[in-house]
Length: 326
Image (cartoon, rainbow, N blue to C red):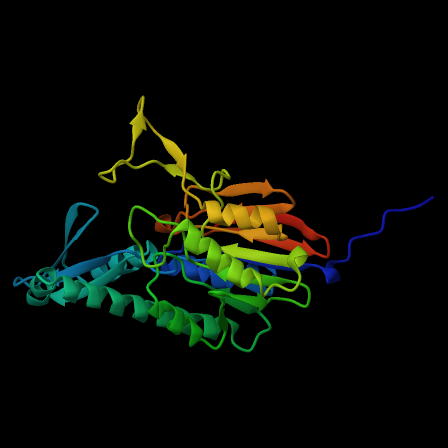
């Protein structure tokens, strides 16, 4: 009588991958705590690390504070109310800022001042995150990897790189384990929003091919590409018209693929072991392109909920994977 040989966990690597946290305090903390919660030594944070909007809280002549958020004016009469609001919107990925009425009016009148404030608040939050990660994981054997996305301005790279516990992956091939390499870019094909890191499909393909030249073992390589492959189910999102409004048909939003043809092409040609993607928040799911399993955990960061995926890698490729939410 012969028994099936048991799988050895010693030959396997467990990865916790999340993406598109967009400035959410609580989502980043859940990501860092994922190492202990899921029992993994490798955390990978995909692109679009930063948030999208400042929420001013202006002090009035009456001594009360006023803000406009989600189309609603709110007046605060106590420090506790302000603190609770700041915590809530920070967990949603926004950047609250208490200021005088004069500073509010001056900033509102100056696009340059708005941009400077936005960047300053992004930097401050990222530095808080790095401090949190170092407090939680410094001195442990947990490896944390991160990369920017198309929405993240370029100074984000330097801030992430300054961390003692986070390794920046952008634009290179990194030896993740003895067996596995990881190739990473946060750049995407063109979007309707003209974001920081987007380029033509031709230029994106050329950039990917340049990195692919440095891969030593494609069979065990991970493609950590912020943009999902085109028409792959994990790139489906609402279609927009020329005025950036969602297109509807019979009362339902029209859905369309928004991924990259260049990303799809290099995955189909190179056949890495797994593709880790994001960018399309609604695209949570999986698809197979040949032998390559492509995963997008999606994102609902504004609800304070962290989507993720646990990926177990072995000698032959992906052994197991499980989507998470919490």
